[in-house]
Image (cartoon, rainbow, N blue to C red; front, top):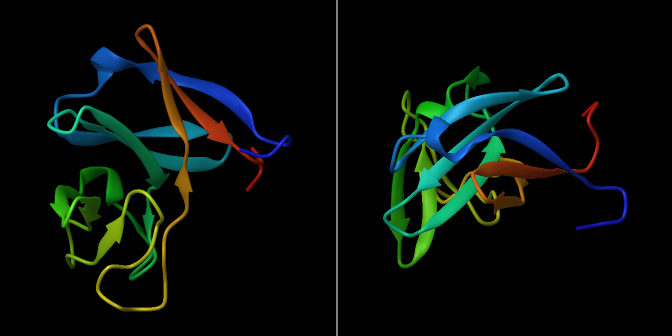
Length: 116
């Protein structure tokens, strides 16, 4: 994480059901946060699916492709890596991901620029 990033508290762990996501708003950004409990991991990415620009990724389907955690858009099943943001279907568009850490019961996201 660069020096310009800051950790922002966005929610509590109990706000997220197991193996699903929820949307939080940080500044003007909608961010999808995922409790991938079957892997014991947390992920965050933009909520906007770049395919049709709908704010739906927080309701996406979580999965694992050869060990790589992924989310599939609930509308058109475009699939993205939750680690890198890469489109796993080969299309050029990708998603922005955010570092996540858990402190006690608090979820924090590493945000580079609150206005982006």
